[in-house]
Amino acid sequence: MFTILGITGNVGGATAQALLAAGKKVRGVVRDKSKGGHLAKLGVELVMGDISDTKSLVKAMEGCEGVFVMNPPNFAPKPGFPEAKASLSNIHAALAKATPPKAVYLSSIGAQHDRGLGLITQSHMLEEIMGKLPIANAFIRAAWFLENYQWDVQSARETGQIDAYLEPATKEFPMVATKDIGELAAKTLIESWKGNRVLELEGPKRYSPLDAGEAFAKVLGREVNVRPIPRSQCQEKFVAQGMLADLTGARIEMIEGFNSGWIDFEGDGVEHFKGKVTLKEVIKSLLAKNPTSV
Image (cartoon, rainbow, N blue to C red; front, side, top):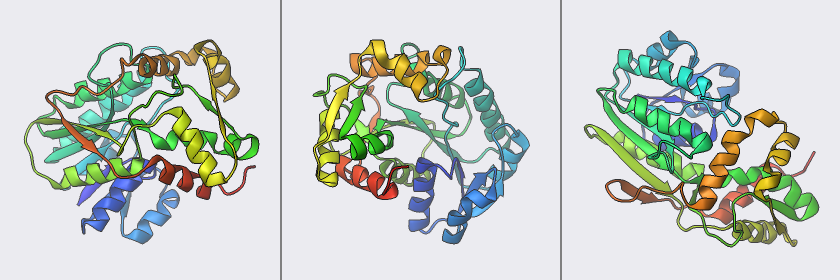
């Protein structure tokens, strides 16, 4: 039995499906069982739990062979990341008490640094805190999610244009599909090891924003242009998306880190993997999931 936190998300769901395909039993921690009905039909045991309730996490983890952990994503954290500190503290306490043999964590490219990371600071904190646990730990430092292009589906379809925060638009960045992350997480959970591991993961090749525009164009059968968004316009754009102006800093710093090359893989001394899912496959899937725009 393997316990998965965040099982209703893309990565947690992909991890569950990969484990089930390997013939393993899966227990998913959810706050609302009605949202995990599709998982229950696949054979997942759903248990009630919440990151804010350590006791529920301990109960979900006890007796399992391993745990997949992802800290709840927060794209607009308060200064100092108090939300991440609280949730990570609870997860750490639960793992320390339940003492599963091993845990695999969703971390991020660049998490080896302790500054200049913006939102990825939360992944650095995760590695620092969980790496001290007396169990086998594996941190998957995933590249930029290809599924981030879900936010461009409507504009690509309706206006033939997508925004690019990564720059220059011709630069190829390491990116990866959540399916590949889930498959590596499942494979790692099934393995046996001691101590801490770092697993870097990217897709089969690197992609530029222009590549994304071309992928949308091929799938949609129409021209799709890429509009670079300069640093000076980022806050305005994010506020228009619903973020509070004073909480956009971490997201902007992360983008700057990618564009400068500071946020990158560590390289030497860690394991490195490449997935199989291509950019075009992800774009096609995103468009299929959103056949019409509201």
